Amino acid sequence: MTTLQRILQLGGCLLVCSSYVCAFTNPRRALLPNKHHQIVLGASQEKEITRDTTYYSPSKGGSATPNTGSLPAVEQRITLTRFLNSKVKKNPELRDLEFLLSIQMACKTISNLVNRCGLVYASGSDDYGLKQYPPEDGRFYSMKRLDQLSTNVLKNALRFTGKCEVVTPAPQSDAETPAQHQPGVLVASAYDSKFVAILDPLDGSGNADAAICTGTIFGVFENKNEDGEGEDGAGSDDGVDNVVIGGSDSSPDVLLDTVLQKASNMRAAGYCLYSSATVLVFTLGEGCVYGFTLDPQTKEFVLTHNNLTIPQRGNVYSCNEANSEGWADDIRDYLKALKTGDNQTKRRYAHRYVGSMVGDIHRTLLYGGIFMYPSDTEDHPQGNLQLLYKSAPIAFVVSQAGGKSVDETGTNLLDIQPERVHQKSPCFIGSSDDVDELQQYLNKLKEKVGDKEE
Image (cartoon, rainbow, N blue to C red; front, side):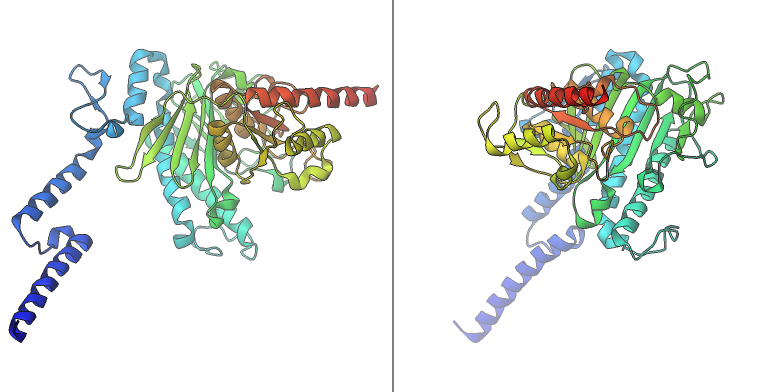
């Protein structure tokens, strides 16, 4: 082979390689070697443009039916929008729950914020109006920053529907200390709606800079104060500084009173997990729990977990065991039984704890086990989780999936009447058999407490 032939052969190889590199970096400007590749690329682009139709397509009659076509079964997914439309058509009284679509939109934005917080929102930045928080405390500053951003995103998403109006009431006194206050909590009601919702925009926000999972929690009640009168004004001084209301007769105080209900009165509840995947899990109170995963290509939530049920028994316990020195002896005895295998299953349990309630609960819901946050005599005499907008909605979801939840007295969390929005309570949530076994230890604790009071 002559030198000229070698040069020509090398040049041809470089041309082909450069064409593929261009196709990878900028498909529209790629120098493709032949028409076959152009046809393949064109089909790929066309498929990308119409990809959303592979998930769900309504029939001509308007009913929601899957578009089967000739696509693989794995691609036959139902989007959240079509799913809710189908539910509303079958049950028109659920029409007022359409602001779940607003929550969906907000969760997409919050997911993007959380995933990019280390790139865009550097700790110590003063670009977001948060100069009042000390930048020297990076974790505290990051938590407050993400709380405020997530709250604003959720408020704007609810207002974007055209059915909600944002109101910021005057500052009110709060019996709890600033360290215990949750500034991002939202209370929302739509115009002419019989439902009112309470939302925690970003649970576990202090973990975001460490790339640990976070989540949004929400619960929906039926508005029992449609006449505009509160029950007893218990929530009027609870320090909630973000209220989204609808209708001219509504007021922040009335809505705060309205959400002070038992979790058993909830009509819907759920959470959105921001982790390696963004997963929206919710229930409409009909005995079913649904899980929708955000497709990063189509930016749509698609049904991936239909009728989620928690295993009857697990082999994992989740708690902040660093606080165990302040726990009651009977609760520590229960943990010892789990760790040593001296329990009903005669198996040793594993310990898994993320430090973000949504992350720990999501794992427990899928694989079984028990999540707990008891009271401790040192720092958390009432536990560290708020009942109304953290424990109660999660307990409602888990109960709809076949699990159980109790407080430290053995009372079902769904039956506890909150007195304040930020009220905290010990909580134990998980598989039914695990909670039943724990109940035996809590009964002993309750007897000891009763003896001391006597």
